[in-house]
Length: 335
Image (cartoon, rainbow, N blue to C red; front, side, top):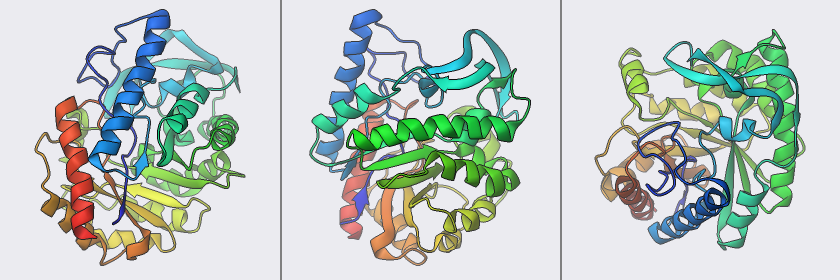
């Protein structure tokens, strides 16, 4: 059977946060919120195991957003005076914190969640962090004045936390870089370099997730402008193939990504997205198996991992659960 895993996020239960939103408001507060986050994590650990996944994540239950959850423990960032900026080359607007001083960590970021995850499953675990380029694209810079310099400042902090996560017992550390599909030329040069700085010195498995975004309307509309073939991966995959990163997670099912682009990742494990995160339609095991079998034309069997296209955070919980079951069942069928 092929390894199976999620890209990162899962829907937050209705008793924890607003549902169907990318930046949901927490419903509990204080100590009750801290406990509720871990309760939700435990719920999704169990549901992933029950679905049959082989590599388990925390579902990012303790993070309001996949980028800003990391930034909450970074000094030099002003969350009190958020400003509206265009995200992913003005694809959509969002209220983001401002970088106002030199960056540093105020302490551990995800120690509690990572150790909780490790303590509650015997399976391999994966923990996700935002990549440097994507962080830069999701904040407002009022200090550095240079995207590359700021990206490497974030990469240094990410590396500190990643090394600590490895010590917590994490098997796979994944950096999420959807910005790589937007700023392709920069991604192939300083983006990959900053990513390698974030992963420097790690001996656990390292991964990068590059997708076309959550299943929100702004992303759905953007995809409609990309034509019959989505070739963004073609620009960055050669640079990643030469990098020290061990795994690459990509969007595949219900996309217009030419499957032969996966051949550009020679020598890497490939997390093939076999679950559509922009549709509530539940994939059948046969559809999942078909996507895997198509990818096997370009990826060696021993290097293929079945995954979701992206995170499932804005999705309805019952839909996400069914999709995880389809993911595992389809991988078993293909195996």
